[in-house]
Image (cartoon, rainbow, N blue to C red):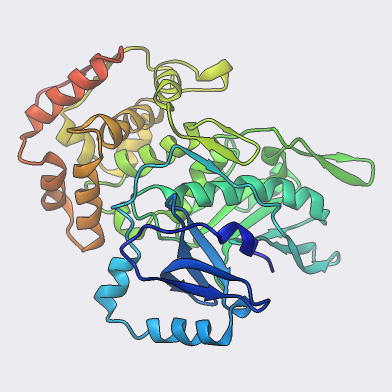
Amino acid sequence: MRTLSFSLLFLSLAHAAEVRSWTDIQNRKIEAALLRVEDKTVILKLKDGREVPYPLSKLSLADCKYVEQSRALPSAEKAEQGLNFGLPWPERIKFGEDPEVDTVEEDPEKKRFIYESANYRYVCDVRLSKSVVKGFAVLFEATHLYCRSLPLAINGGKTVDDKHQILLFEEFDDYVKAGGPPGSAGVFIGGRGVVMVPLTSLGVRPVGSGYMLDRDKSSKTLPHELVHQLTPEAYFGKGAMGWFTEGLAEYVAVTPYRSGAFSVRGNQKDIFDYATGFGSKDMGGRGLGTKIGLPALKTFMFQDYSQFLAQPQLNYGCGLLITTYFFHLDGEGDGKRIKAFLKALHDGVVGEKALDLLLGGRGFDQLEEDIMKAWGRKGVDFTFAKE
């Protein structure tokens, strides 16, 4: 299975990890740094901050021995290697590969068809051609690349044999019977670590005896659920669950996407349009308007998830705006405080102690004021109720 052509890896790497020469089984050499090891795959770090998976089976014997030695690093050192908070914010993420798809199983009697791309295993109840699977694999792999390129240590997600699990359904009714919400285009089942998607959400429609894919069809729901699948478990703790986990997923999903590329730079206009109106070109949105009232910020951040879901338009839209504030508008615009907050979550700090790092010495009243001023300059009039 080809995860990334070796020629693409001929990029220099500026990173704190050790830069060394790597050789593949065809004796091609590169200079790169080992970020971490995930089962049978090494994750290398590129100059632009992307995490690139490469199969151990395609590395030289000497490199395989080096990888085995790296597994003996102290656990704290390993954990630190997996955090990428020091990297720059990406401007554009492009998955430029033609994703190689492997057919693992095709059993018409059991209605079980399994396909694999670099980071995903697709289990479908109908046979799909490789061209169709490749088409929607681009969206999934591009979203994976985007999430791993954000300097937010989005390194979570349950895998089976180093693959994230995607369940695909030919009929929408079968998707609902399997647990998909009736009004949804896809869903992440946290307990199982799987994303379920009806084929209609991927632009797949029957044509004759096969299927055709609209490669330019975009869906905000699917990247949103894929982000949940990749989000570390620590980020779902009290104080981050809801406003941040949904805000992060909305941030990725609203970023303009087309044909394997996310245009990250300048996405704040799209975020504004989506939260306050109905998105660019009327492609959905939260429709909150430019005058938005919320409970006290501390109350908003600590509300139970069931409460959060009770007003999805308001809470998802405001989660997006507040998360974007911490990414780009807080302090020097470098996301310093939210990175400290997320690192604390990784370290096991929870609740108000973690949020203290997000406050950065401010009280909640001052933070509310800062959020109102920052978004006010962009045309959003926030108000927060008093506790």
